[in-house]
Structure formats: C-alpha cells, structure tokens
Length: 340
Image 1 (tube, rainbow, N blue to C red):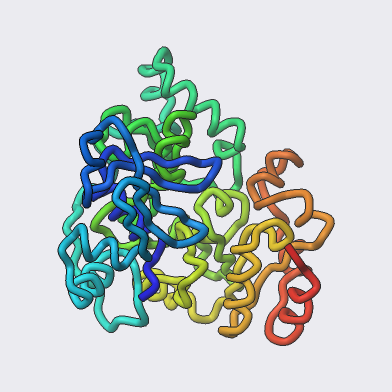
Image 2 (cartoon, rainbow, N blue to C red):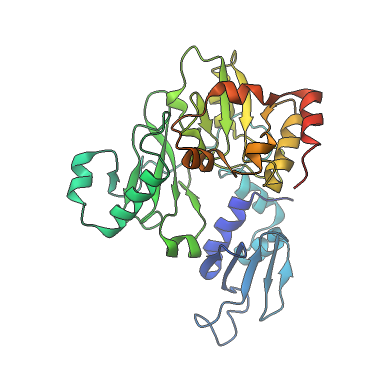
C-alpha cells in the first residue's frame, strides 16, 4: 500500500519522540518508539523518515521498513485497520460515494489575528512575530495580489499552528471550512513541515469563493499561494506525486458545480521540479489539460509566486496561461521535450 506523504508525516509526528524536520536533507528525525533509544531517550534522535527513499529506519535498533509496516508496528494496527485509518482522514483511495464525518468544528486556529485588519495589526504592532509574518506577506506580494483571499491570519498561541501564516479556505457561502498554515520563522521551517493542514477536516479548495459565476476556465494550482495571482484559480493544498488521485471527494464535488468550465492545471515548473514533471504526465494521461511552462520562464522560476515577486506582478495574464495550455497528444509531445 502506498501512503500519502502527509499521512506518513502525521504519524511520524504522532509516534516518534521529539520529532524534527531537516529542510536541507528533506528528512524527519526523532526518538525511536520501538527501542526508546536504549538509555538515550530525549538525548539522541536516531529514528529517520527518509522521504526520497520512502523508508523509516532507526540507527540504534536497526529497524528498517517502508512506512506502512512501521505505522502498523507503533500504532498496533492490522493491515485492515491501517487502511481504514487512512480512508477516515484527508487521504483519498479511489472515489467514495459519501464523505466521512469530521469532528473539527473550529473555523480557525485559536485566537487568530486578521492580518488584513488594520485595527488588529496596530494592536500587535510591537510583536516581533507579527512583524515578521507581515513582512513576509508584503515581500511575497500577498497583500496586493489580485486573487488574494478576504483575510490572512496568524495565531500566537495555537498548539499546532502557533506563529504560522494561516491560509483560510472559504466555501461558496463565505464560511471558512478548512485552512492550512505555512511556516515563516526560520526555526519553524527547520523543525516542522512547511505546510500543516487543519486536522480532522475535509480538504477543500482555496479561493473557491473567488470564482466568477460565469467562469469559462478554472485554473487548478498546487498550493494556495500561487492561486493569489491567477483570477478564477483554486489551490488544492498539495498533491501527492505517488497517488493517482489529485483531488479529494469534496474538491471534486465543489468543482463539479462549475461543470461547464474548462479545467487547466498549473503546477510548478516542469523544468525544475521532477515531481511536477511526473504529476503533469499523470494528469495528461488521465485526460486533463495542463499548463506547460515555456523554457524561458520555467528554467528561471520555480513557481508562479516566485515569478510574480521577481517581475513585480500582482496578476498573471490568463492569455499567457492559455497560450501554453495543452491537452491530449499535443501535451504529451510537448512534455517529452523537457528533462529535469
């Protein structure tokens, strides 16, 4: 069984002792819950989740396996229980007829500050974390982007999402039904994943409430931040390279309300990102239309936000996206010219 990476990371943080993330090596480390690090608990971290190898190993007791076996061991799951646990969360295996029930009823993390509310920002103007997060918002042009959400938030005391930029996902009734948080502070980026999602809640579509009623083309981007710069675009909050499913059940239901609109996927540059290259091929093979970065831009910029920051843009002209959108055989031929 192949598990979504978000699920593996979630379980690693749940069962490993004092877990940390190393951005430079893209690995997670912590105390081994199987051998308890011998007599070195809380002093040594010899358990590793190696993302590129999709393996979990301990340099103390010698454990080495793929994530499913490790999770079944530490969680005391049978294979059937593991599969049921995955299917009960935000991780989809095939199309389900009904949505599982969720229990997280909180719209936002605890005591969230609206960074677009001048009164609230003024109150916290001397707080170093607030100043740092606002500086990041401005530097990334998130406060001026044409398709920005109605609000961005920051929580200073939430247990999970403390000191992180909160990205709210609204439905068509302007209700926040999901959120992701993004690490901003250096320490947070070193020790935790860049993005964390609202637990026990269905993953929806970012900026869904910004779609025009008469839209002819909906652009689907991988992360929420890229969606800030493209009108009538939605963010899917991350895609799994190894999964054949690119959308959750709820996301499919939301998009189906615009069944007359053409859908175009806009991923990170295929010239720089191997995962994006593979996922683009999967999307083409499944009949989707995709934006394939022209070499001049794709070799220079990793994603939409990086390009907009460098070129000082608040909006990507959709005529440019249309010019480099391909479907079917033409898309396959175009993609085959790219090598990473």
